[in-house]
Length: 226
Length: 112
Image (cartoon, rainbow over all chains, first blue to last red; front, side):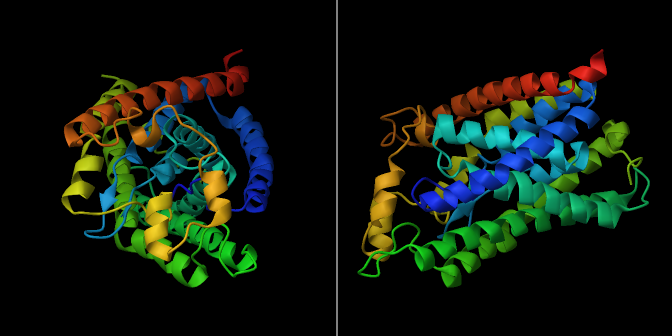
């Protein structure tokens, strides 16, 4: 889901940088009020986890590859705003150091994976786990379903961003200037891969880690703010 | 053991296992992620390389492109797997350091 340089027009990239600015500002303002100093190491581990889990490419045999993001897990444990900051850092380092995701597309990639993904996942998790005690199995299910939905909504956004390019930007000969595939190809391709394969990886990882933490560190699964 | 230390150990395990993210897709003959093709692949897929894409795609030269050392593209899986582990380690060090810094700056008030 890491959109490379050149697949989105400079205008599209600008729009998403502009969209991320107020989100990053709000995230730092909110995290300033809510993040406890003792949670900082967990946030760092969360960002590192998201980074490394994205390196585990999962194949669709004979087809494309994809990966989990781990972002819904961060949102469940630390809240969506803190998750947004942590995933953004991972995405910026991926783009700058490893060329994974374009530098012009950092805004769009952060919008999809560091905003839409943790917030959609967090919303679903809160909805399903509402009123459930921290040790309940419902929280594990909620985390898994939230992981699946969060990454798929993010993939849908990426598909739409790709798919709008040939409609908006083409030369006189009708050749696309950036991503050549329209919505009819890009959306099913992005969503299909994630619904079929990568979304399940996100679901299982999110659910398993929540289950592990319920046993090992139940205070990390808080029910207070429900 | 404190949970934080257990989680760091978990990360270390993931670093060591990371080459699976190369080996398994290779085994199942899976290609690039959708929408992350290079110019050559694009030429094959759609018959041309979009002009704007060609111009912007080489804008940035990452120091370790595709989690490998520069010039290692043609090396075999064992080399790439090694570079992958180094990349995972390096990435985790940089990212956790940056987040620790941001976290300390933001969560500062709680300390005082």
